[in-house]
Image (tube, rainbow, N blue to C red; front, side, top):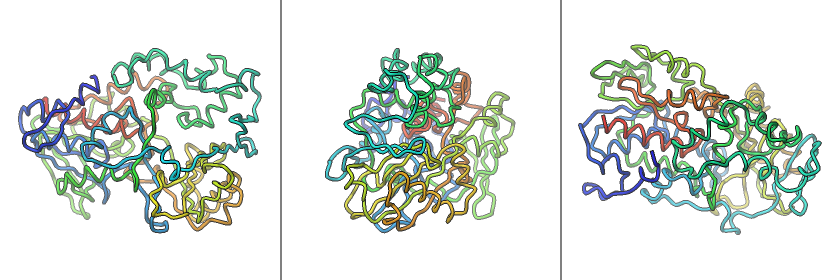
Length: 482
């Protein structure tokens, strides 16, 4: 399906809103009652589109908030400060997301302008025990490299050629053809075949935001986010918090969302579907014509579904990997790094992983204060989870001091978020291993009886807000056309 054509707009006479073709604009076939499982971006999108098409919708959400893995943190920080524990940013190629941002008139802003609110400067590196600051745009990499690898960009040399053959990243289905050539190997294997030295492979693995540090994922899974940004002129976020996006959906859906409703079981009958939910310790049955299931497979595999799903779907639900991710947020009373000509961000091979500054966009309410995040993944995240909260903050602060010396002088406190310890996520995002995008994703998307599937794990643009939103729109369209 051409995503751009899918998002051609028409006006609904009833609401005056601009709606994607395929739902309200294309005409409703039969009014249905639909239960949406989960109020993350996928579920919210599906619910919104189904409501606009005239269907009766109930959204059940186990948490007491909307957004799912969009989570803006405010509590635990000085008033005015925010940090993103989930989705953070988007670019010009997030066509579906931008459709709703404009539809709901949600303010957003470039991360690069205005300069006065987002000071530029160097990104710091901490690799193999050394703190490295680029000089005149060059980095003195502490690795054995080929002479030519020390000149220019390793990304330009080794990554960009791998993206050839994709003419339009908005044509999601066409990406499968490209993905087949990259899906059966890890990125490290593909880089080795491209002639990259072990040092260059290590640099890309540790210092790029898209490569998984443990080199487990399919190369296609690593490179699809790069494709997703190809040709984009800018990167954006939401002043005041990314949860402005999910809140915009939730406010419009209103009482259709039932918070604190945990799914216990799903009965997929020939003529209807029954969802059993637990609310305040009491079980309640909800019947409907269709279900949109956006529950992560890490959680769904522990929910009873009868009759049993097909063997291929059951196998995938039981075995799809999710990335362990623990994010530690350290509040500081001053952006002290700016005086050194640095931007606060860093790429490291330390346990705390990538360092990111928050808020994503300064609003003025935070004053001189800011937050430094240590974004740990894989086994590093699991190592942090074994510590008490106090010890985790102390450990992260000690490591942050290697990246930003004198941070102790400015530290005011902190909090952390572990997605694998969140009972309604059990992992930050799906992590497709070699061969799984091309062999598993079509099966993941396929409806089972009256159950339709959505969520970032059902999109070729997994682990992104765009993938989640696109999947919700797709699931809603499936139901509307039945």
